[in-house]
Length: 90
Image (cartoon, rainbow, N blue to C red):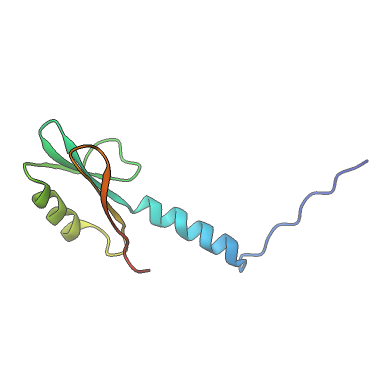
C-alpha cells in the first residue's frame, strides 16, 4: 500500500493563522521576576535579563515603557508564582 502525501494547507487557513499569531505573540512576551539582586525583566526566549531593578514597581514601569505595545507581560511574585498576566489587545 502506497501512502499519499497530505496536501499542503492554504495560507488562508484560519487555524494556521491563529497558530502562527500565537507563536509570534509568545515571542514578544516579557517576564518580571524576582532575582538575587532585586527584580529582573526578561524577554521571552532571551538568555539574559534586559534589566535588573531594585523594586518590582521599577521593573514593571520599565517593561511598560520599553515593550512592544502588543507584548504580553507576565509578573511573578516573590514566591515564584504568577501573580498578574497583562494580555495586550491584538
